[in-house]
Image (tube, rainbow, N blue to C red):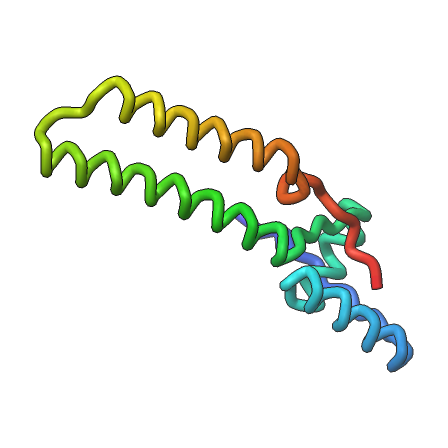
Length: 114
């Protein structure tokens, strides 16, 4: 039985200025130039998330972790948790939810442009 090659190779020549632009855009998207070209050709869309938006999300998740550590520490120390403690933590979690909703930029997709 004859095997068929499922991959196809295609050679493209770029002007140096065009190649520099592709490399710059690929670096912005944190991709290799070949993967960037392939995805651009197939989807015509490259989504990039800004590091400052991701850092905001990381801080919010860290806050959740701090709250969980407070619960565990309290349980291990006192061996009980009061309704006030639960209400306080619910309020803190609600604050984080509202903060993420107001600063929803981490969820927005952006087009890669230079």
